Image (cartoon, rainbow, N blue to C red; front, side, top):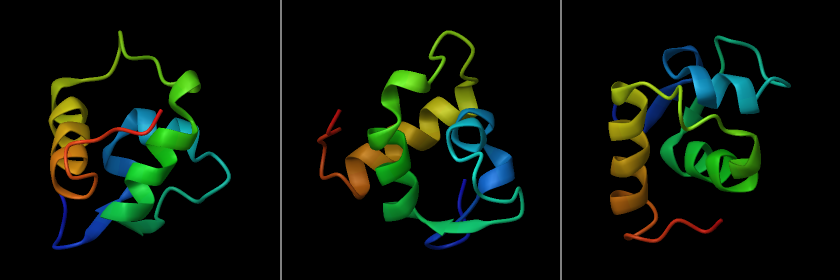
Length: 71
């Protein structure tokens, strides 16, 4: 999923979509990734989000968000 606290944007299609202002090779912290998901929740296509990205998002909410997704 991540490399320590480093999140490679290109690994997660929905995250990449909502962060289109960043380059595909951008590396984020887990906190930055969760903040992007939260700020741009309305633009996510949850129907097409793959299982890997769902697990990643769940792990961010449990770990970084302490179980809370602020949408």
